[in-house]
Image (cartoon, rainbow, N blue to C red):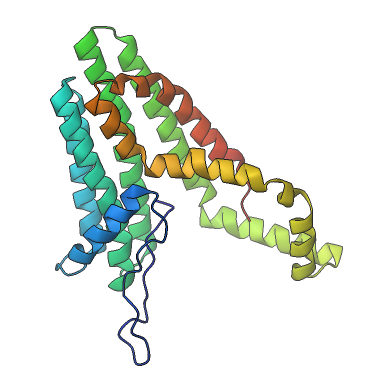
Length: 253
């Protein structure tokens, strides 16, 4: 996830007595707070970051499987497993940094698991609502939301492609060289220009895109407890498309 738990890599070295894992300074997202507490335990276990990611995947998919039964109590159990899966998703990054296991392959595996669980959530909820209500449109809504999540994953893969990023960096450097404007001046001009007007938009994007995704497991838990988890399906079918459109057109340096 994009909201990671910070760690102090210099902890334990001479002159540095700070904590190895830094407690998040904001209450939200709650899943990150839970991930922080869980990280204090997981970091002491003989496990690798990829193993934590694998367990997170297994726990998350088990929760999604419980959704397929369309029963209230199983939906609640499934949502609780999703909360644990999300917390473990924060832990794997902490383990990777503190045990010096950061790698492109590990990051790619983590992104893959995020996509797999997110997609399975909507597919499981859609199937469960179909079984409980008998209306196949619930299944279609779940599949549409799952498809949107898949497109979002594909967009992220393309935008994170190292060759594309290198080409964009080269094009940006060429533009700055052609304009004769130093990087600092270019940054100042951009800050005083259009991007300054996007500050509110960036905050809204954070709330409705990043924060809502980070807290999605708790949203499912609350709706499951009140037996109205089905409302996620029409919103998810629309919202999943908004997510990948937002990622597609979001400006990156």
